[in-house]
Image (cartoon, rainbow, N blue to C red; front, side):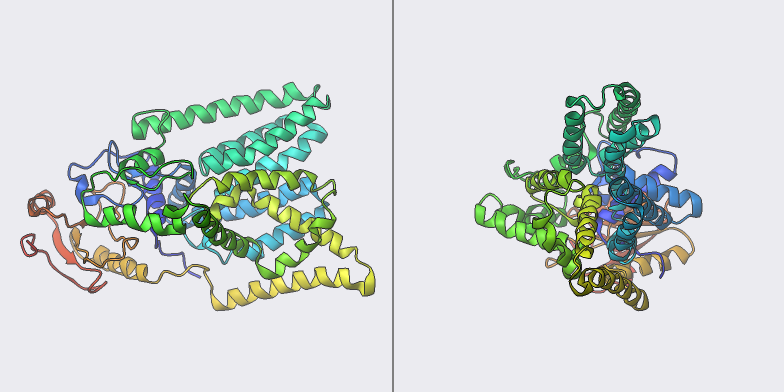
Length: 485
């Protein structure tokens, strides 16, 4: 299967971060004609940069530096996630069962899903969660310097990938450690463990403050929060009120933030119980279908019978705490659960272990073998089909068009003109970190013809094309800034 083509706004935002980091910068200066390059999930002021936390972009940048291909960073992060998940499960389960659980995760989400076949992320936060929860049982047996560093590294990864969900995941882990100390079991080990954790976390917070300051000018203001203040109407949390619509420089951005986002997961209806429950059902189905599906749900039927099992006692209350945190968000996508993915598979494996103990007619052993055979079969079938688990074919046209333009002599400028019935989430205007130095530059046509003329004057050394993606996604024509006005 080939390296994936970026399709959605989030992917282009992460790729901008990767390009910036690979160029040796944390952010980019604002462009003098930044209104022509405004795009979804990207900051233009006070600097030009992705709005997202940096961890995913750094993995993509690693792929760029190692092989000139950001997808290598996705591949590495997914492999590390599966390995970290196996290591985490080994802390809670016998080694064979831990390995089996990791293989189930590989078969279910490791290869043929959007975690592997887009630039969107998921695996990086999964690594952080696996390190956090993998250290927990080990520290209660033998706290040491290595485990302290691994836990702190996991928390720092969560802070820089899924900050809110990482915080919610860390709450039950911290409570468990506090309970362990309160019972007097860790007094002799506390100094050995706490000092390196505190040291790494302080460095992590200092890095985050510096990163925020370089992009937003305020160490306590994250780029994502600044982007939401600049453009968004729908708030993130259910207790927050809808913001007044800000001034938008183009109609597409306005409609995306004021109409499309409000309809996504019924965000604009969650102020009522009925709307909140309807949205909850949509979110729950997506999470269940991604991580488990029908076949892997069957072993969980034993869960009510094994709630007192010592291996899952912690997870029986940690899970509801994490889910309660997610319920406070208006938007909850599948990768938001990544910090807790290890817990899902741990509970699944423990249920399978109990299933295997059913002696009647050998049904328990047979059931576990059927799970293994089913997952192996679906994995093989996905491989035969070349299933990437994510299909937005319209963006292949953009990739093909950009490839054609890259092969043309000289530099190119593409001015994108949308129609009135344009689908707001289908954005074409995304650019590299070094915008002026790029071979191909994408710009949006602005309502003011004067702004468009200034764009052409600025890029007077380029061949200028007009693209109307709502008419044709592959045909270009010479651009005349006065033709529309």
